[in-house]
Length: 221
Ligand code: SF4
Image 1: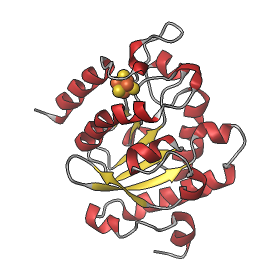
Image 2 (image 1 turned 45 degrees about the vertical axis):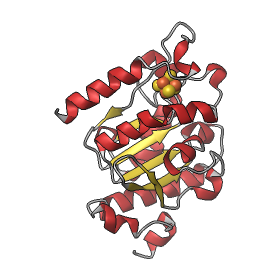
Image 3 (image 1 turned 90 degrees about the vertical axis):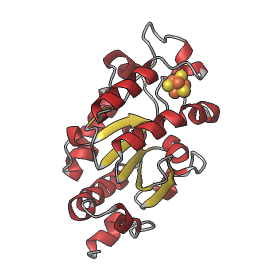
Image 4 (image 1 turned 180 degrees about the horizontal axis):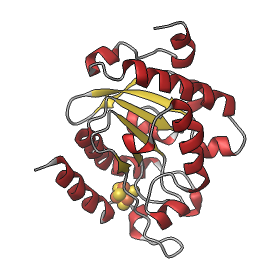
């Protein structure tokens, strides 16, 4: 089956999923499911936390103010076009009252994220915020202030590969006035890394795990 058809089939499955409570109720009259979008052959995938109200209205990940921040303060500074990456969420359905997805919900949604990762097959996964630390890196969903800006390896996906991961603050955190300097530095480092190194093989990229992008890249890796 063509990749496009595989993604379409996966999207259909995700949009009808009711495996956890998040998918079993409409919120504010809108279906809570939002599937990822962008380049299905991207070398870079972005995983945020979960849809909010605006996402369920527009049926697209990272829209509204958070989306504007993502577009202008992360991707634009990194000199990366949004349509060149695949953007999705760790939980594909909107939680009530804008709360974070619960551990059990993330666990239940993990096979669907795994399917997206395996089909798109990125070399680099940028995670935004604490929540995807668990889904992508298999570590507790907290501590983004410690992990941001430092490359690491992902959990092993069902295709047997570990991808490179770059943690960053979530736009929503920055919109509350925190982490603005750090996110700018991380975006600059990300852009440099993508330009200089993302064409390398996944095995070669594994050598970068543990490196702090912005500071070390300035010294010329
Ligand atoms: S959050 Fe994920 S697992 Fe839960 S219903 Fe939605 S798609 Fe299914």
